[in-house]
Length: 429
Image 1 (tube, rainbow, N blue to C red):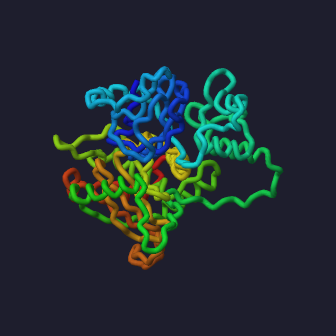
Image 2 (cartoon, helix red, strand yellow; image 1 turned 90 degrees about the horizontal axis):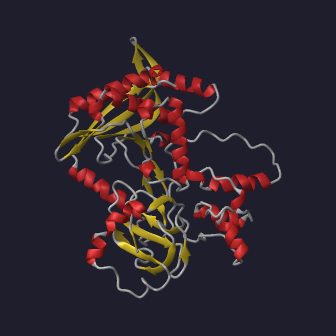
Image 3 (tube, one colour; image 1 turned 180 degrees about the horizontal axis):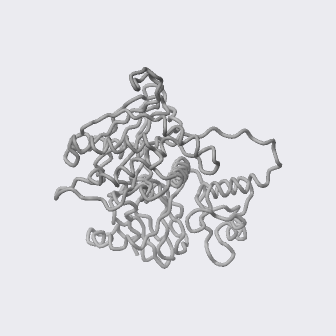
């Protein structure tokens, strides 16, 4: 039976075969990870939808093929697939029907990571891949490599990932538990939500460093957005004095910390609920009103720009938004995010305030109708009741699709956002 390139995200049209974790002739079990696929959203693990023998690999590592094209043949091991010609066009045309049979999970891109932990002995091989009850232990390739390096058996670890999947954090916690106690560490400073280490150039001067797949997709989509979507830009200045005091009070109570970006995300969601025209998308047939308020926030990471999405943001408390944002940021930085976490957004927040940027214009993340560019909170002289006083002000710029939001529409949305941030008790913490 043909194993086809599955659809792993709502915008995926093709996929790149990153790495085969099985070789031709090897036996595979149903649900076993056999390859890594690079999509337009993330790196994913491809699990076999049936057991058998990997009789033939049709797509080599690094090759990009469209959804539905056969990438391998799984058979009984009696040579039914080996040595045959690649599937015909008619066979490939019928392949998309099999997409739903393929399961996928987020993968850590580690080109040198072993697919399983083993020193070659049957006992070691079984311990690395089985939970002792006949089921295969689910673990990311990075978690497997770390466990091998530290001499840990995966069967002794408890996975906290989806469906009990063992992650890098699980292995590191187990390693830390084996270490002798050390002096108490100083508390870490609060991390800014969208800050990330800037990628360091590795190519010599004059060399051309190839784009990663994510970089290529971001570049293409930004060009499409700027050339196909008529952008309009509106900027307002917001008094953040009360928001700063509220954040300090919330964080002083203990529990989940709240950042300024969390405040902006939550306020944006409530503004979208109050003014639903901004929570729409342009289509050829008209303006589509999105059902949920799903706010994404841009994260710059080495190798590309991604936008994790908090679903139903308007229905969650401020602390819930903050907790989910931290989880998504952590997963994204470790490349453990799933395609679902990067899909379905209806509005995006892009914050460069932590870099000292006062004001900028962001490119709309299609098919969304708008994106909010957030600048730094600055102390500046302001006139209040006829007196010059020191104020804390933040500038935000809304980039809007003029086919969906006219100038007055965008201005009304910004007025609601400004009111919510200047009277933040209404955000619900």
